Image (cartoon, rainbow, N blue to C red; front, side):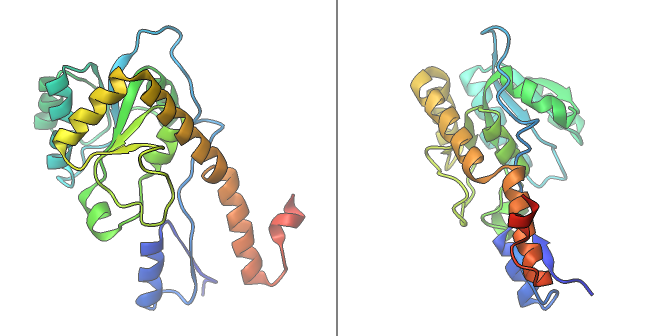
Length: 234
């Protein structure tokens, strides 16, 4: 009885259509609320190195967190924090062994300030995202770039061309590459500056909530036959 389905990635949209779950479906991606997620630099220059905001989960990325976050942090002797929920005792111990502090749950509106107190963050997608949902990043990628913090990603395929890998963020093919990328971002101020500026520009150009509202209104106009709703709404 619905007019259609909004899917947060082309892979999901294709799945709904191919399985006959929806007559019509549209891709409607995540975005950054730039009223909240914006650069909030620390009041002084005393910042920690790395921050990770994400849940440990149900063994869907345990190995990946060790390879792309904890091992590089330990190898480089980084300072920083880990925030999230569903961390088992073994996970909390692993964070401490890597030289990082476990901060537990963090309210989402506090994340921009936390990003501002660190020099780099990482994106470690869950295994199902990489294997079954290629091309779909988590919302944290949008929010991190909107906050102007340099981002280094574990492998994922930007199949829909949402971003500019290598400019908006760096991609590490394995743990050794992640270690090298993190060292480069932390030691090369020009590289860090380039990543911040490029990521911010891409969010401002394509991936704010304002963009998604305009997209939604265009979608609505196709279901009602009422023409360009977005033009009238403005």
